[in-house]
Image (cartoon, rainbow, N blue to C red):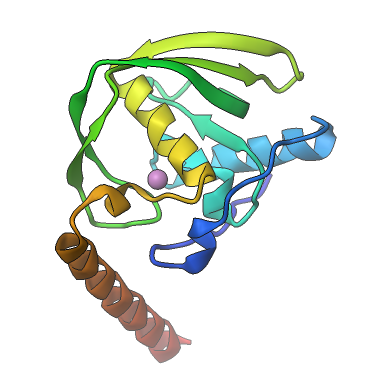
Length: 174
Ligand code: NI
């Protein structure tokens, strides 16, 4: 098992569109396990492969209270959506930022599991939101990009400054 470094917005690699997984082999299963470990270690409820700089259509999600409800989504596609809702979101790639955007309220999803078995899933509430958020990552989109240009620029400036400060701190103690 390994913890994977998470890219931070506005890293341009977060804009990469992920490619479908051709073969779900042991390498892919290990990646899913590493992504899950990384998500749990960061106290996240979802992580897309894009965020760990691997551009394959893989996401892990766990919205359960006890953190034992891991859902691995491979080549997932939303095939139906309904309704709209306000969604206050955060992201492991955008630390310290929470903003409200609009999402579909209900979705139907088709994906492959770790054993390459196709399945369908209907979701609403937090799970539906989280799935939409992670699939956006795989399309190269970070949730703050739904915000106004002004808000987005403020967030970018703040994160770039914060990253520089973190770097300076690391240098100071190294
Ligand atoms: Ni995210």
